[in-house]
Amino acid sequence: MPKQYYITTPIYYVNDVPHIGHAYTTIAADVLARWKRLQGHEVFFLTGTDEHGAKIAQAAEAKGVSPQAYADEIVEAFKRLWQSLHITHNGFIRTTEDRHIQTVQAFFSKLRENRDIYKGMYEDWYCTPCETFWSESELKGKTCPVCSREVERLQEESYFFKLDKYKDRLLSFYKNNPDFLAPRFRSSEIINFVKELKNLSVSRTKVKWGVPVPDDEKHTVYVWFDALINYISGIGYGQSPAADFKDIWPADVHFVGKEIFRFHAVIWPAMLMSLGIDVPKKVFAHGWWTVEGDKMSKSKGNMVDPHKIIADFGGEGLGTDVLRYFVLREVPFGNDGDFSQKALLGRYNAELANALGNLLNRTLNLIEKNDKGQILGKKTSLPVNRLEKFKAAMDNLAFHEALEEVALIVREGNAKIDSEAPWKTVKTDPAKASQTLHDVLISLKQAAILLHPFMPTITQEMWKQMGEQEDLAQTGKRFLKTGDISFVPEQTVKKGNPLFPRK
Ligand SMILES: [Zn+2]
Image (cartoon, rainbow, N blue to C red; front, top):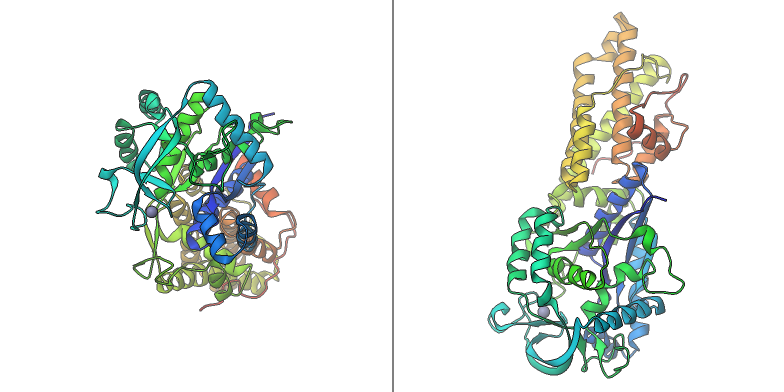
């Protein structure tokens, strides 16, 4: 059996309900998962939640509930959102599950047996909200470089992971695997960090809400160390009976936000190297969203709620698809971007309502008027150029470029109808008019297939209106394999309501 294509999101910290940032990473992972399936791969797509640490214990205490009860509630909010966003993960891992705890403990014990974990004393600046120790040089003034909150001096007995030992192996790994750190412009940050690498404290005695260190239960495993292991606990590593680990690992892509790139690009591969487990093929760190030009924060009350955007565009279905499309179209994946109502409406009206929706509508209208709804015209071959560019962009996780290729297909379709005017030529050369409409509809069919991973619901609607009988994914798979996308004889279109009503 060929190895499954393995895609992960980070497991999300359950300190608060999900916002657009969580949705963004998960949508990107889902689009890639759907695209890979369309290309004929068996895909394993894992997401989940990170539920240990002092911050969760504190939040639970403030609400007067147990940490587990608190986590259970927030986990439901994540699951609801993934449902509303039509996310097709096939694994969901929680760090409070027995199977995860079993893997973490097995992992920790093996590292200790290998003498890559030892006991010592740790002291440094600690940010409780981020669960992270910072060295003096990393602090921003006297505050945490990530969240800008106060840090405190903390000293405790701790187990250490010999991260320093992996410095040279990591550096040569990056060199020999230039696609591992992505996007490439973020790689120098990692390489510089590795050059200064120190051993990592991987247990806490002050934090009770965590995975107990095997045979030394006054320690719990450092929440980050615990969390990273989800990528293999979620597929059965170290569990009995072992699940599908060998058919799935290594991960093809770990999607992460740029703030957690280091953990994934440095600590995680070193942990795996220590145990002789293959290192993932790629870690991709995307950028952050601002909102209307402002930093998004709980205190400002400007967190974008994905459910609200979905509702604004008519609920699940269209609303889901518009949000999925917008976040990957608006900003080059990897860069920072701004979420604004103006940009959202602008994209929607220009690219979906006026371009794509309009092209479908006018083409179907003319086919009904000129040819009684029948798709006439001869089979033609598509220009392969756009498809090849689309595929290359998807391979590079340049989602905005892939969508640009589809936008060009649509633009060319509208231009063709404008210039060939089939509503006129039908009077003098009906065969030519039919051919124009056939060719434009073929382009629309191609657009529907390529857009399907991004807009899974609306593309199905397009499909129906074009009178397709076969399942979109079925045709899509064949098209990507053979290039065949022709219509069946006697196929008639079934125009319905406009799919993208203007806003
Ligand atoms: Zn912090």
